[in-house]
Image (cartoon, rainbow, N blue to C red; front, side):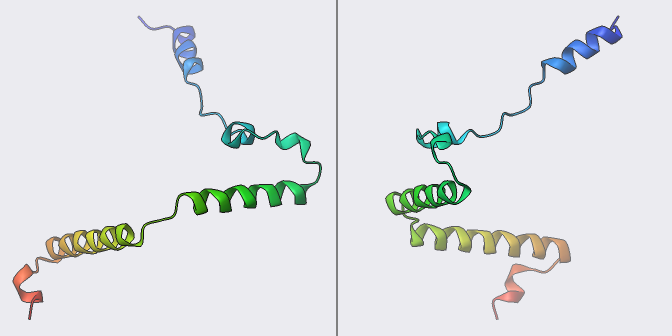
Length: 89
């Protein structure tokens, strides 16, 4: 038999995901930056550094896009009952 207090206990155990702490993301103490503008500039600088250090591969993007287009086309063909051979004219 499940009691109301047992259910409440189970509900309390579910912990929501904690918000991202900027201190943990990049090892900097964001509280040392006193103004909003300084914080904003620091975050932009860190984002630029991340994308500079880890550039996005254009070939990978192209392959992924092509794969998505093929998948979407297959879904549309199945939805509307169009044979794949009719499109290749």
